[in-house]
Length: 172
Image (cartoon, rainbow, N blue to C red; front, side, top):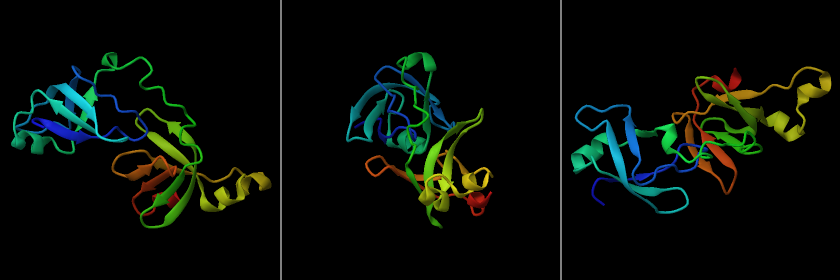
């Protein structure tokens, strides 16, 4: 597979690369192309694709681009490509590498700079409604930035998200 990579979609999004699309590699890498065209995108399994690019001509260039993300112009995407249901992860279980079970996802909070997972902590998840709701106080929720640096893995079959967040973030 010359000029190819095994690629996966960003967390919570469908795989969006297709033949002919121009991509920008980010972050930019010295001595590697900043842009390329997809020459093929072949499914390997439910979550991975073999993707080749016209500007990746040898192993040195390929190795330089490992861990880069591919950005595509919005106009090159199918019209419904970014339609994500706000409740898509509702009920998923969240586990942290250090503390174990954190709670269940209530939804997503869209902010201009990032998306956050709103999680009902373990005690509130077990109680269903949340302990604060009965007393009139708002139930406590945990907001976890939905960024690659924190997401360890996602298992769609198990509705499970494994994270590794900085110490103290879950207590905020």
